[in-house]
Image (cartoon, rainbow, N blue to C red; front, side):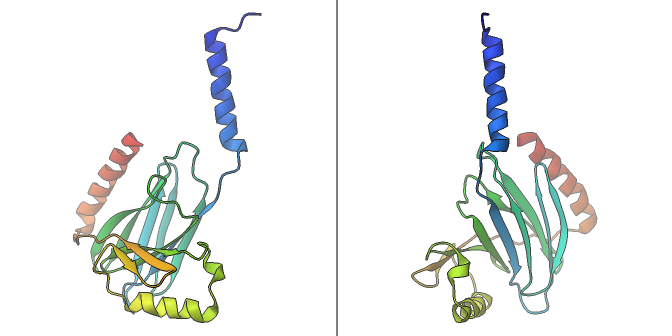
Length: 187
C-alpha cells in the first residue's frame, strides 16, 4: 500500500494533536492580590481566548487564584480587567512569551500590577512565617516608582506602571465587547 502525502500529513497532524493531550505540561498558578489601600475593593475579571473566569471582588489583602496548563504552541494568554474607585485598567496577567513563572504572584497597587519573583528557588512555600509577614507589610507600604524594584537578594518586583483612564460604565461595556471581539480575531 502506497501512503499518499495527504495521508502522511493527516497522520502527523493527528499525532501532534494527540500529544497535546498526552504530554505532561507544567501547571501555572496565578494569584492576584489587592494591595491598593485599606478599604478599597478591587474587581477582577480574567479571560483567555477559550475561558471566561468570571468577575471576582477582592477586599484589601485578599486574592483571586486560578490554575491552568499552557498550550504546547506557546501562545497562552490570560488578560484581566481591574476596576476600583471608578477606574478601569486592562492587563495581560499571563503570556507565554513573557512569563516563565509557575507560581505567578501579582500584587495590584495603585501604580500598577507587580509580579513578585522569589529567587531562592521560586517557591514561596520555602519562606518562613516571619519572612512572609515582613514581605506582606513591605509590599503594602511600597510605592512603585520604577519597573524593577529589588527588595532583597532573593526578592524582586517586576512592575508595570499604567496610565490611569476613567471609563463611563455604559460606554465601557460597548468598548469591552469590541476589544474582546478584536482580541479573539488575532488569537
